[in-house]
Amino acid sequence: MTRISRLLNFTIVILSGARIRAQSKDLALNVHEPLTKRIVQSLRGKILRLRRSTASAQDDILVGAGFFTIAIVLMCGLCCIAQTPPAGTSQPTTQTTAIAATVPTVDARGDTEVLKEIAELDFYPLGQTVSGQVRTVGSSTVSHLLHRWSAEYARLQPNVTIVVGGGSSDDGIPALIDGRVEFAALSRLASPAEVAAFKSRFGYEPSSILVGVDAVAVFVNHTNPLQSISLAKLDALYSRIPKHGGATIDNWGELGLTGEWERMTPVRFGRPPTHGDHALFHSVVLQGGRWRLDIDADPFESSLVQGVGADRAGVGYASITYDTPAVHALTVIGEDGAPYAPTRENSLTHKYPLSRPLLLYFNKPPDKPLSEATLDFGLFVTSQIGQQFAGQAGMFPINRQLAKRITSEAALSSGDRSPRSTKSRVMGRFETPLV
Image (cartoon, rainbow, N blue to C red; front, side, top):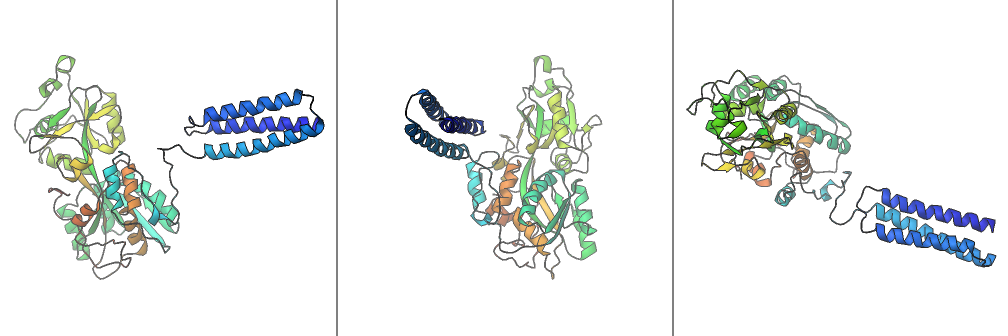
């Protein structure tokens, strides 16, 4: 009976451990747990009663062995249950060699229409291992996205060295001209002066690919009751002499707020002049006018948004990707007089006035191919999986129609891995609807 007793004790331990394992998983096991609990308690009770019974040794052996077998089966089943997510949940997928079969999950905003549009993009082409280096410098907004891309790409192509540098949009093209990077990251179109400087050096203009779309949101503190603002009022809020006409705004009451807000002075946050959102705001809102002198210029969008969230009177502009519960984004009244929120649809159609392209500029000589690492990384970021990561990072992913319209030729086409002689430049000033 001593051996049987030890066997039964071990069976109890297994059953209890199986239940603990099932309940300790951070998955939702609400459906399975009641059944698990009843089975474990029932079997445990039967085993304990068996130990107190006066059954023969042979019966003890048979029954004990039977319960021991049941316990092992139950433990394995519970382990499988604990590792299986309930219906309606998803698990992150590990990208190995089956990228072409990957179906992207819904992006960070939960938009199934975005999922459909991402599915129309090309698969990231596999079948060969590339080597080399990819260096980037430029926009902090695009660099935020590049860090996500580089982490995933490094797993797919471990022989490619990726270096993501910081800085601002103004740093990108000079670094590209000097040959210090393969990609210049800009959250705006390259300026005529930048294009001219590049052409003066190489005899042709820089090429570019659109890797996402962003909206520069106007944030106020979450307690602020203001919901919408016009470009003229924004101009009066941030400029010394409003180009839209009228007087400057010195308190929230001049924007229609009452009560304790009426005489409260806005605390203005802004961005340094080297950043793309500063250039966009200066062009669209101030129309090239002069800035106020009491604007707190913050080089980091995240800390700018934190500043607005910490000050009830705060107002500032930054990428919508930095939205937090401490602030809320205002709708901005467009040219048609209607208010538009900084959403993907409004940004792609440019109804939201402060939408902008996210671009990677690169040096593509007309008579020479791109390096295999440069070409392959470009294919990755514009593929289904690359744009899925863009959505998860809070950016607005591109769609096939937008990608075709932005580029004059497919410089980075997954249908033909051989580099093409192409200009592939962004057309226009991002002023017309893009979809």
